[in-house]
Image 1 (tube, rainbow, N blue to C red):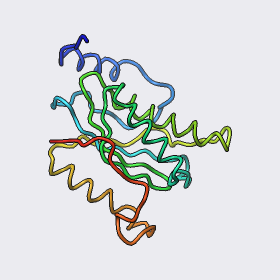
Image 2: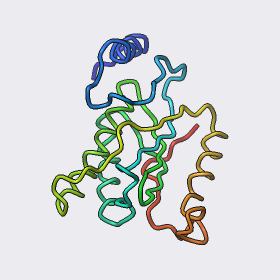
Image 3: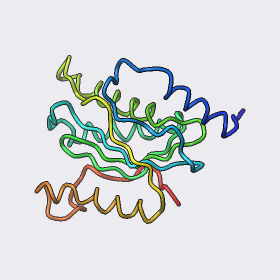
Length: 174
C-alpha cells in the first residue's frame, strides 16, 4: 500500500475545500482548511429534513452500523454514536487518506436507501452537517456525556442506558 505524505494529503484537502464548490451543499457550514493533528476526531451531527422523526428504529440502526463498519474503507473509524428520532450524533476519527465529508455521505446514503424502500422519493436529510474537531481525550469524554443524555433531555427515557439506539463501533483512543 502506498501512503501519501501528510503534507500532500493536507494540500489535497485544502485544494478541494478552497477551489471547487459542491452544488449539493450550497449552504454548508465552513470547514477548517487545516487540522493540526495526525488523526483528528470529529464530533459530528446531521439532521433530518424539517426535523422529521425518521431515525430512531432498529432498521436505521442496523443500516447505520453496517455503514460505520464500511467507513474503514474510506479511511475513517466511527466511535460512539446516538441515533435520535431526527438527528444522529457520532464521533469519527479520520485517517491520513480519509475525508469526513465522504464518511458522512456514505452513512447518510445507506440510511436514505433503507428509508426509501417504504417511502420512495422521501427527502431524508437537511443539507450539510455540523462537525467540531475535538482537542483532547477530556473533550471526547465531555461531549459523550452530553450526547448520551440527549434521549433523557428529550423525555424519551429516564436514564441514558435505557436508550436502545446508541453504541460504539470502534474504540477511539486518545
